[in-house]
Image 1: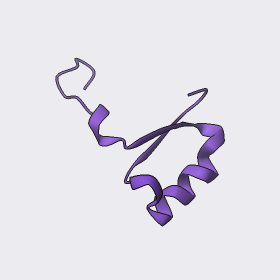
Image 2: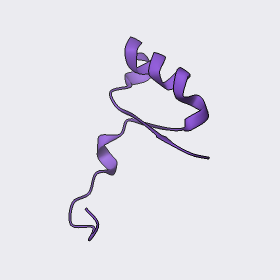
Image 3: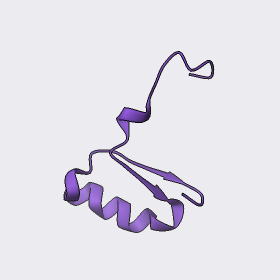
Image 4: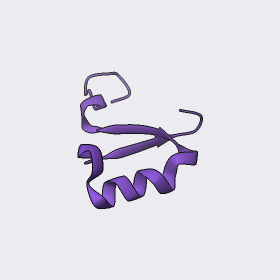
Amino acid sequence: MSRDEVRTEHLATHVMSIEDGPKGHQMFKDKEDGCVRAVFYPGA
């Protein structure tokens, strides 16, 4: 991964800021908006 030999961007269905963690968790839990895997980044 560090050499960009393995691409993982397609694995995240939703990318959100860390501040949206509770909302993202609820979306994942309820499978809202097709949420399969949420990824959280500071300031995203």
